Length: 330
Length: 289
View 1: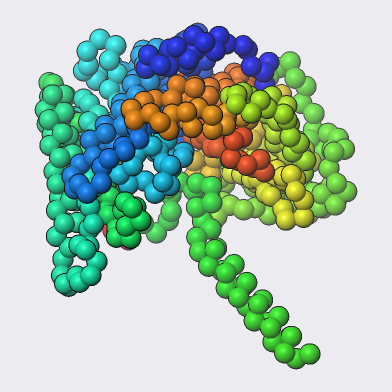
View 2: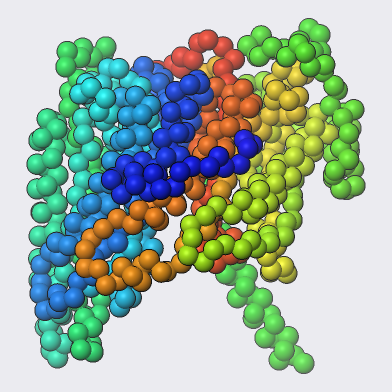
């Protein structure tokens, strides 16, 4: 292990972050990266070898992170619609984290970052502890990916392309003559006030207000994704990471016991376009069907211990029963 | 073919390091039962392994024999270190303690493999167990399968003459050897970080604006960077060409929510031939469910 912690200038590091930049230590590590041949990557063995297949060279693991405070919203009660402040907070934290990933990739002069993993985490809930329309939550957004050098990807000077496609997908696209050209994303928080009406009498049937909310949130996000993809000059968007969640939260206004509904739509996608002048080496044909008899895939840690939990629960119950029956026997 | 000759596609053994027959290497650190078990396995040419059937066959296909399940364990008392309540800082004592505990577990596993005469260990799992009987006590456990090249060579060992370690599965091991790389070591780096308490967030709770919290971003970013940097330093020290399959984990261990450990682990690899071409895979549609 290298001598622990070389000291860094905390103040300048903080300053850099508040400008949306990278912390000093990240800059140092990546600058060091270009002085030796060692690469780091979170690609699996198969992904790593496939990237070599399409003339892409692994440079380094890169990341970005942003911890973000969503502003407190004092007076949102009684409204239904998108809560712009919350949507914008999620958007901004994503933008900042991805921007840091982008800057890291710039330092190592990458052409693309592939296999980006996205992680959002709630660090503290708001003062009402219920999420919903009050804001005041602290969230962390983290992205980790692998920077690669792939000269055949067309992009503006030193503007690496980011994608959450894994190595296999990236390889399959490149083989058919497609390249990633952008990473559109958006987020929408839609709030429905008193989703089940006044709570006294609710007829059966579809809850139209909830349905409406999901529909509207999805459309708003989709429009934004399409607009971004167009700006990237994309032919289509693939590999979309779409999450739609709907969560009931207490209204909480003057001890109101009715429930509101929060709809979150989060969408990431990779904008893809045809590689100019690409001549396919072969006639594209329908891939053959296979029935795998032998698992040749990856065995990741803990992958083969499915259903263990249930077993232990059963055993526990069994042990309890035996104890009880022993107690009766005495 | 003489005993010490490397395989045709294998790496050259370093010339400056004399080859010590593994059975003569001391294994002083291991418990008596471990030594007895390993000695008996050596004698009887009997093996155990946690490889699946496919992994077992693939490992044999690239010329290796599984020799036995090997493990190392270290039970460590994790002390506390005082941190300033409202300050983001690295807890260097804790960082080093946890690193040391893992190192001990790994070293013991290597010693077991050495006693079996293995060239390396594949499928290494590094686990952390918290037992009910001890508060602040954590067990670090390293388990893997010792393998030896069928032609008997030290050429596959790590640069320091010990068996190589890797968390690659049997399948990955097969693929990477066929592609002209070999694993040289399981590398890791960690960082224990204290995250400042509420003060700042409480002050902010009056703020109605959306804003990033630079202090916190800096703190967690820094901690991950440190873990990655240390892992990279280990790989460089091994003379590796790169690290594949890096994962960054975070855990609380026994400390509550304001102290986090970030650990980065991966397998360092180096090239054994110039040609890294793999046969172009063909696309298939799987009809498994």
